[in-house]
Image (cartoon, rainbow, N blue to C red; front, side, top):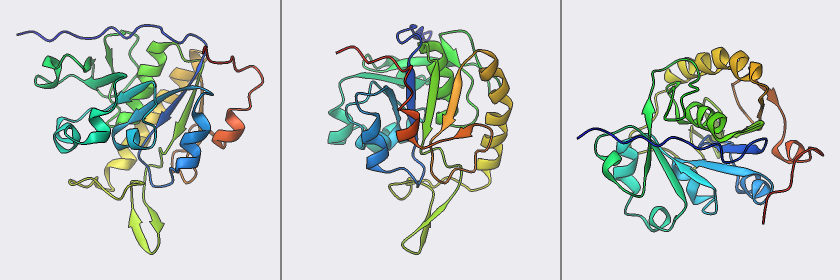
Length: 219
């Protein structure tokens, strides 16, 4: 059976889209600052902090296996998107995007380039959805020491931990995509408090959302 891919519609032309990752610096306060102020894509477990988000995104079947029976996962009834996978493509409540390779940014609304991480994929998805500005939250690309313990996610860690070495590869993909997305007139602001990602201007999420040109969200 062939896959049926979702052509991401240009739903939010000219709007700001916040992408909420799982990095250790992410706080509930940062997430709450986005509510009602911009569109929000929550990645993986960050749905737990933003159950009201516009889009929930995950790319790994193993993550789905860990969490799809949990109440916070099942309680979300909005738009849920994943990367192509034979098992998940068959589920009616999940939209599937085509995997179009690692580096670069896709202009084909049926797919994204992966950049080896979900935040990068959501940046490509935000492009399809019409973003004029993209805010990155919890995209730390490394560890943070909290209460004497190192962790690389705000919730602790996945059952299968992320190796530290992969973050440098992820950063290189972001760096290469930075110029391409700027050439499209899209401003990316890194609102992650402790991020090792240096290729985008850093700003607090509160400051980023004070843009006087930001249109109000429809009620």
